[in-house]
Image (tube, rainbow, N blue to C red; front, side, top):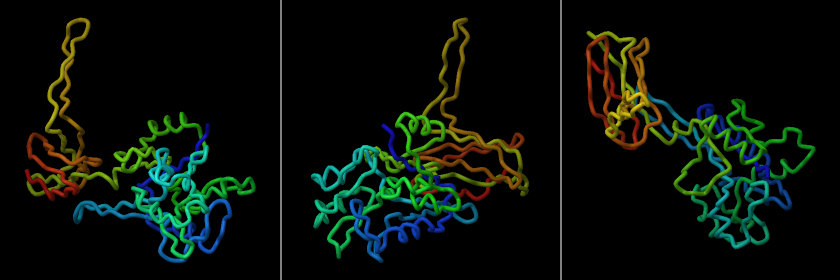
Length: 293
């Protein structure tokens, strides 16, 4: 059966907060019977743009992560709700405004921190993926308000079969946020590594000048030479420790991104002049300055 999915490209988000304002415009002081009570004027961030700065001057970048209800298939709030939270057949997770009355405990059941408490209404609330609009045949945009307003097309809403989404995940390299939670979200991210992982970057100088065209190799501390024999008895060998290679640009710079925590070996070959060092990524991106050869 078709499901509603949202895909968010972290690389395209500029933190303009148009999505945040569209959400406020749609839900603050607006009652949508059967869907949700009015959102309070202050305090709630049903879509919250999180920020992360990586690296140090001058090799630094900033990533923005629009975070909202993940529309989980294994929703912890649904499990804790005892009927106060339910998942529609189309994948949208909803809060029953009658059964959830007084259930402040449900706010803490969300591991993503995207459920909010409405003190005046005594209700937990969250993003409902604009279900009231998606159910409305006259809503010509046929998407959520946040996706409709985004100038950079950071967000896209899809109503497709799970098999189609599985193909899209592979084709576009989509990921879920905090996969270790095992909640199986229907919200997926592209270029998520810019927010969740780290990079190693540096410049290469030869005789004091920026060196363009140096080959830089990043190796893991694990791996080695793996060989297989062909039918003709010929050995085909591969160095499995090599994670990636880069070529320095006009400014002599290189960058390896999407790295997990761990120890790496960095090797530089600039026209025969070589360098090797061990670097450790520990929850921080590394600007190694200049490697002088």
